[in-house]
Length: 201
Image (cartoon, rainbow, N blue to C red; front, top):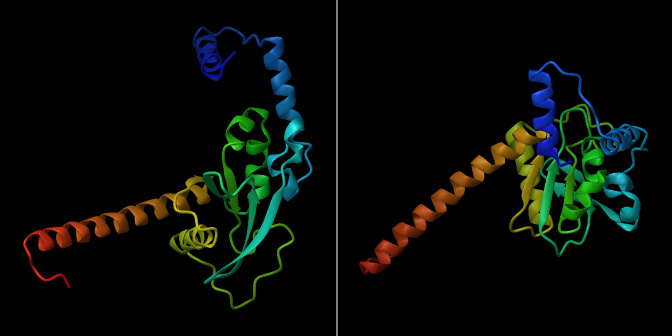
């Protein structure tokens, strides 16, 4: 049963006030989901699912204006990039572990390299931040994502955030769109000036 059929069936049953009947395969899938809660939280478990257990991760410390940021890199860095940013009070590991552990994700995760960005002081076994540390704003957390992209020389990436992480990546996308539009506008002005034979400054 695919997801849309399941959603439609649930919706129809609820509208008709009938009890839901789960297939044996769906009940087994639900049991597998429950078992995910028993997983040990470790960076190595970010993309592990049976046959996927051979996948390695690399923990990289990236220098930013806000200190060294811990990034878990999962997959071949030659592949297209997914950059994740977690929610408040979490690190990348508990925030994304269940999603990337799900067996259905292997078809996607095999085709990408995933960069799990941890906000300052949020990674596993993080040291306490200094008392005088000024925590970055939401926009500045977006600057951290850019620093990570620059460090790994990512020209493009898919941003995948949860909660506050989604907010950070949306703000970043808006900011980059504005910068991109300004660059295009300047390029158009330069092209018009060049075509008119004007001096380009």
